[in-house]
Length: 223
Length: 223
DNA sequence: ATCTGTGAAAGCATTCACAGCC
DNA sequence: GGCTGTGAATGCTTTCACAGAT
Image 1 (tube, each protein chain N blue to C red):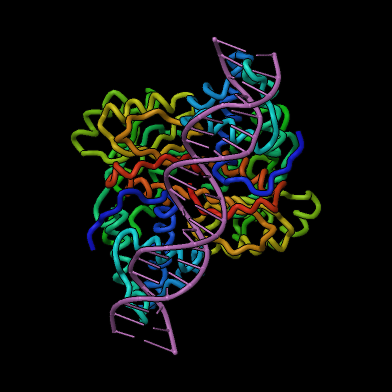
Image 2 (tube, protein in one colour):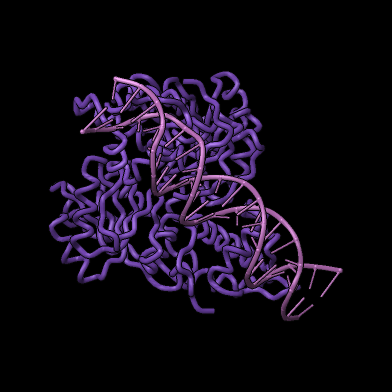
């Protein structure tokens, strides 16, 4: 029941996110029980893999019976930290930043939520304007905002040449996680987590795998 | 010089995309030579890793000297298939599909290009309208379009519950690569490549790594 | 009988150490 | 001397086989 993991494959964390999504769908369909076999088929991994992934965090099933959908869903939410609120700031109010500010799908369950607490830009034409009920603030106000609203994560949606600056500002403001939409490798201190969301890189990998279909891409990954 | 690889780590392909980006930036800065050490620092991996990644595909450097930026950039473009044109169709003309149709950054070099050749939706209000100089077509026209324009890859930007249908339509139309923006695992035949671009999954992984900072996420990944 | 949980084995990817070439 | 290229070693992830629980 308690966590004892010294190290966990990053691929395991990606798969847990997938299992959670599958469980949420099962629950919505009114299905109460499932098995490692079923989860494996839906996630397109092996049943061994599902059981090993879960075993990093505890024992959640019943031998001979499988898993209770509700219980496992809750446990995965707890493990991933999706049983609480997360305060988010978006840095860069171009098209993408605006789209993310207006996005409605952040709370997929009543147990958790991603709250957009602030919108940041440097453009004087944008600062002061209102998007989705929030006023765009200047990057100089980021640190104050972050401390006041205890911001947990920042989205970087600025042009690529400004991405490192945006990251530096977030780090200075005490933000511990960055979702980086810009196609660049950010430099941040060890205690700040970065996840990349890069569709251009995805297209390029795709080009390679179309040309080399025998080198099958058997991973999920994300972003 | 010739390819002999039987299997290549997927992480290697992600890193090659990063190296290529770094080389393109070096070239723009007028820098002619580089080294595995320098590339490693920029990409935040080890120099061993850079050399091993390149070794899967051939020998591109000079001992004692390093790499010629121009040559290595060209070789990586060739390896990744970014020395030709790629025809793309976008399935799903909501906000995201429209943004991707209007995006201007697809040709980062004069050597290659991603051409948006078609826009697809099912909504009769959208079919027939014009976006970025292209007329939105019904999904029923996808197969004809795909054969006529020999479409290589499709972007799936439909709501998640329609994503598998969109994938089925692309597969039926003979498209060999899918960039999936919907948060779901697609089922496709073995000869079709899929890459995922999923910012919701990225946020959830980020939540986990913020809560568990000792379990450092040392991968890049994509998307 | 069934399906989970897990130690051990196998398979991969990364790291290393150094040989090879400017 | 300097830096690449690469076989060998290490370390990590996945797969397997089966013990354990209902």
